[in-house]
Image (cartoon, rainbow, N blue to C red; front, top):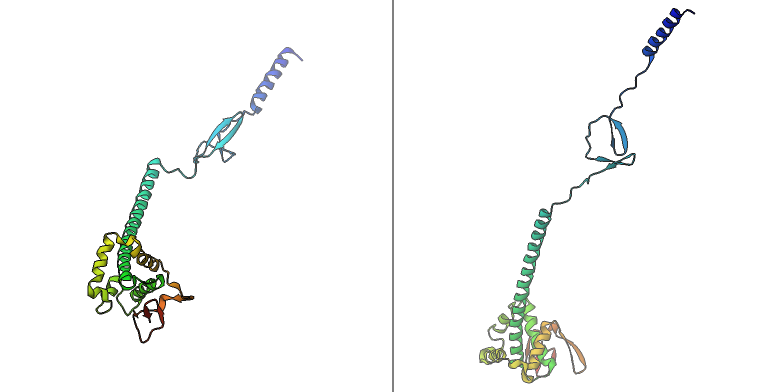
Length: 228
């Protein structure tokens, strides 16, 4: 082959090679969503990616945002205010209940001493029981004071003895032995003790609404009183 023909052949080969060569495409940008590589550059997710070595790792943001410190403090203050209000109400109710108890104890102790001060414990408790049974009955006033001051029911009220004993109570005399038993009977009946032992019998005092030195319809006699 002549030199001229050789040069022409080589030139033709170079031209053909440039025509059929496949150019590499520009690599598309990629991103990772939930661990999967997809093409494109838009990122609609709140997730971010971090490169660890040669691996792309997805880092998720919290799905539920944490409450701000200000909101937590505000909620706490609201809860504390509610609790303080409840505690105040309970304290007021407790104070009122204690006040009512002291009033009831004062009246009961005085009437027990007036009616049965010299009797045994069973006799004193029975008198206190009659008063409370009347308070709880529909046929009588629903307060201790109302029951005691009901007309023509309790002699010591009319005779002035009750007023004198209330003064003694206020002076602290019911802490001494002479009247201490009457105070204890009043405390016990307010605590719901309506059962007493007397002459070998267990007596339920809940059923009695009347007492006197002598009653024609008496059901039982305890110490110096008949009860019906």
